Every structure is written in structure tokens, then in C-alpha cells.
Length: 216
Length: 248
Image 1 (cartoon, rainbow over the protein chains, first blue to last red):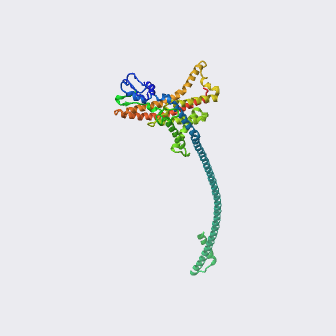
Image 2 (image 1 turned 90 degrees about the vertical axis):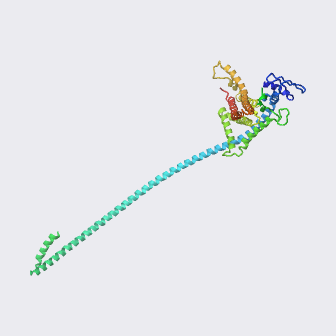
Image 3 (image 1 turned 180 degrees about the vertical axis):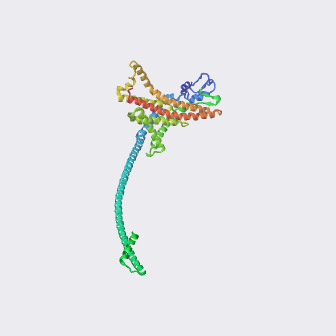
């Protein structure tokens, strides 16, 4: 039905269309001059006048559409191929390049950090070994010194002990002599006090025998 | 019938597609600036705004608009590379032009009171014919007679090959038809349906449902606008692949 109206519409643009009751076959009367015979409502009239049915199939406008479409496509193509696409391509390329470079730099830094860590570890191990050596050397030295000192001290002690023993011996000797003398004198005095005649030989022998027993 | 006086409903779902002169009321000649001209120009303007003005910063860290431009570029670039192969990238500007034009024409057509250029078979027909002719000529120029191998299914049994060749040839020549009608038909139907719902909004009782339906339809139409641009482009890539590598 639409298409029926379409066909007639272009011809009837400037004229009024009159139709018989809507659901009957439309009887369109187009007067050549300007008079139109109308029966029934003019309900469909403005539909027929305004809607051309499928404007897509109105071939009269094809030339216009195709011409302007070609112009528009050419414009878009020029805009894109001359300006936009090279620019966007360059931006994306630059970004990609920069990212690659940054990643490479990061990788480089990582490698350097690893190297630095290895060097640090090596230095640390060396320092430890060095320290160990120094400790061992010092220990040996100290041990030697200590031994020397101990030996020295032992010798000193031995010398002192010998000296002390000698003096103790001397003291003991003198003490024994003194005791004998005192005993002899006391014995001679005692003998004389009791009216006897002190016989030095007898007294000496008696004292000696006694002292021998006491001192020993 | 298109109108029903008794309910006050007025349906003019197709009026939005009428081509009118932009100035005055005269006939539409091929050179007349018409509403087609206006909306094509707006599509060109939109492309220029997004891809030239939007990327004018050439920022390493893109702004939102530059990001959109780059993502569109990346998507179409990857599509051609995936579907047509590395050699297809030589034709990237042409395919990208098609995609951008269809996408923006579709989206602009969704603006109220606008004119949808891609709902016209004249427009989509030219687009499809450009692809068809371009791909066919390219196929023969690059492969010579080997391009005809596209129709000779060498993997099929020998007896079947002539039959298949006839089918292949028919399907090859139907390509531009389906290619163009798919795009125009989708947009035309969606826009007409929205208009019909809009007419129902005149009735108070139905108005809320009608308005909800329009909202739903509109969302659906946005999806259709993008998908149809995508479909048109990916089919172009497929045809391009056939031209570059015609062997079955």
C-alpha cells in the first residue's frame, strides 16, 4: 500500500489528493489543472503528501547522496591518511620505543644491582678471610708472648724459690748455731751455778746430742 | 494504512529518511546541498575532531580523547592484521576510512532530529561497491588468473568442483548486496521502530511504556550502530584476505 502511494505522491505534490473511505481501494484523482474531486476523509492525504514511502528507494536523490558521499569519503580519507594515521602511528611507535628502552634500562639496572651485590658479597668474604687471618696471626703472636711470659715467670719463680730456700737454709743454720751457743752458755752457767766446773767438751757433746734430736 | 485519525495517532516512521534540500524547497539535484550533505559533513567534522584535534597533543601519556583515537586505531589495525594478514596493512587507511565513516554516521544518526546517512541504500551500496570493486581489481592485479582459484575448491572431490564453483561465483557476486543491505537495513529498521514507539507516546495510557521502549530501543540502537560498523569493516577485511590469498 505504501508503494502505491509512493508512486503517486511525487506526481501529486502540488495537488490535493482525495480518497474514498480509508479501507477501500484508494481512488486517487489527480486533476491536471488544480481541481480535485474528493470523496471520504482526507486522513491519508498528508501521509501521502509527506511520506514518500521508502525514501531509500527514491532514485531521484541517489545522485545527490552518492556525490556528497564520495566527497565526504575523500575528505575523511585525506584527513586520516595525511594527518591522523601517521601521527597516531608515530605516537604509538614512540611510546613503544620508549617502553622498550625503559625496560632495557631497567634490565640493565637490575644486572648492575646484581653485580654490585656479588661484588659486595665477594668483598665481605674477603674481609672475613682477612679478619680470620689477622685473628689467627694475633692469636699465635699472643700465644707466643704468653708462653714466653709464662716461661719467664716460671724461671723467676724458680730462682726466687731457690733463693728463698737458700735463705731459709741459712736462717735455719744460723738458728741452729745460735741455739747451740745459747744452750752451751746456759749449760755452762747452770753447771757453774751448781758449783761444778764447766767442762766445755762435755757440755758441747751433750748439747749437740740434744739439739740434734730437737732440730732434726 | 499509515494513519489513524480516530485515535490521533500519526505514524510517519519514514519521514526521517527523506532527502531534502538544505536551503529552500527546490528539487534535489546531484549538487544540491541537502540534509545528506549536512550530516556527511558532520561525520567528517567528528572524524577530524577525534583523530586530528584529539591527538594534537601527541602526548606520551594520552588524554582521554587521544586514548579513544589510539584505541580505535589499534583495534582496526589489529583487525586487519589478524584477518587479512600483514600484507593487508597496506590498505589500512582505506579500511580505517570506511570504519570511521560508518561508525560516526551511525552514531550521529542516533541524535534526535538527525538524518542517518548510512540508512540509505544509495550510501551503503556505494560503500559496498567500492569494497567489491576494489577487492576484485586488487585480486586480479596481484594474482592474475590465479585469483579465479578462489572459485575452484581444490580440496573438494573433482566431480563436485564445477557445482561448487557456480555456488562460489554466485556467493561472490551477492557479497556487495548483503554487505550494503545488512548495514542500511539494520539502521533503517531500528530508527523506524523508535519512531513508531514515539508515535504511541501520544496516548497518555501507553506513553510510559512507549517511552521506556524508546529508551530500550535507543540503547539497542547504539549497540547496533557500533556492531554494524564493526561487521562492515571485518567483512571488508575478509574480502581483502581473499584478494591477497585467493587459494582455498
